[in-house]
Length: 131
Image: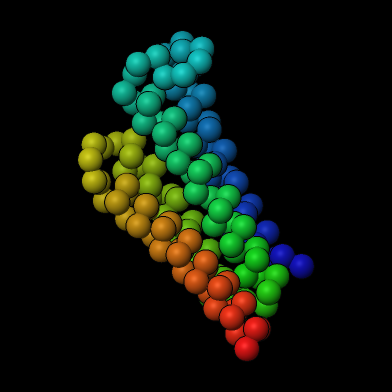
């Protein structure tokens, strides 16, 4: 059973829907049918949503593999909480500022660290099984 993965997948799905809602709200407010209408804030909302959709699935795949293979629940919760925090702070930094804002920088960094850690953890479990 993937109960821990299910918890974080559900929380992250709500975050994605929140980002989608922000895009819809922008488009309705600016009367933009498709795309961003050349509006810088619209571009930022769309990129924040796309960025989440690009990174969250690979993290969840690694998360699920880790849980299926008997990964430590404490490690799963730590990485899950870190990923949720990263995905909450990233859009604020991307939408509300230019360049390397706190949210954008640390949201990306934490997301990458979670993915790298889970990939390494899964590789380590495989190697340990083979020995």
